Length: 470
Image 1: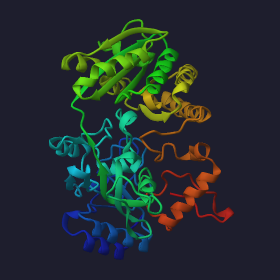
Image 2: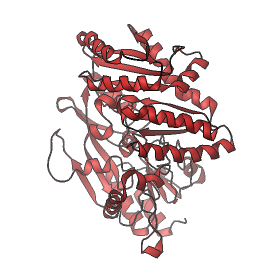
Image 3: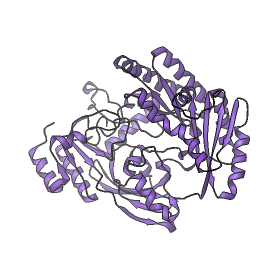
Image 4: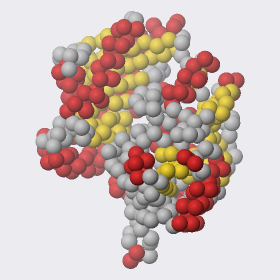
């Protein structure tokens, strides 16, 4: 789109100097994310504070200019790609840790703070913020909140939504508001914070977050259980999660993932077709009893190996296979499709069997691994050429539909973005989708915020509706 001259003049007033970029080279850099989708924005701005964000939203609303918020672009679903052009607001300069309050176990931060930088700042206080996505060294807190990021520790400590107390934000209608509290209990009105977290920038732009912190355990221990088949591993997951000692990580790898590990010289038992990597944490004195409890639950039909790390070197060796998977998959396919579906733990075997059948039917490699404790599997389709890419896209439709059939959900932590938008009606149902659209209309009546994302398109003009919902 061509930006109105009056709007560009407003941008120059709100964002003087290098806080506004109109040159093609800069705009191109902010037109893509880790989904490998791309679209050219018409302008990029770098807000320094809440007041500039509020002024930006007001200007975009007045001139009906699309506005897409962005952290560091690590999203894999296309959620930060400016499909309709307009303005990209990059929050990388709003990166202050405003304050840390150890006594109240909270931190107040701006959205551009990197997850890893926050963890380093919290470490001297003996605290941490639980969300730990793989991209933690370079993803932002704002991005984590936008898609409700999680990671391995979510099985014990929860995802982003479970670890935020409140937000300051600007809605698409121009309203600045605060949601939530500075307390861990609160029952005062609607919970706007939990509505905004996971909304992928389609309702409001977050300018400050009050995060709830957790005391950092002083010790941890890594365990590994290998099984003859997926069903045995899933049964063990159910037993582990049913007993009182909750692991802080419970990771799963299927037979194809283990084969890939072996091919690259990694340590994986030769007779294993499924593997669980488990971590327990706490005070040093409780680790022996925690390990014993997990081992009792893990032992059962199909177990072919039980192993516990006794020092840092063994711990690193056990985790090496899991951490090597994503880079290894890139060597197979630069166009890998990584989806993060969730099913009830008891239905993991049914999903893995479906993936095996789809790999054969569509003649593409499919590897699955992920956070077994909450049924969150990363399904990796690995097309190696244009024909396989086309078949992978067709297979992905069947993956999503099977997940829904299994009472699962389309995303555990990556979000919906553009990649899964058209499956939302099947995933949430007509009633819930209608309410979500009404919420969108309330927060963002002109639909300027991140258009084309999260919610599927409405019926066309013949029905009296106005097109894209998000």
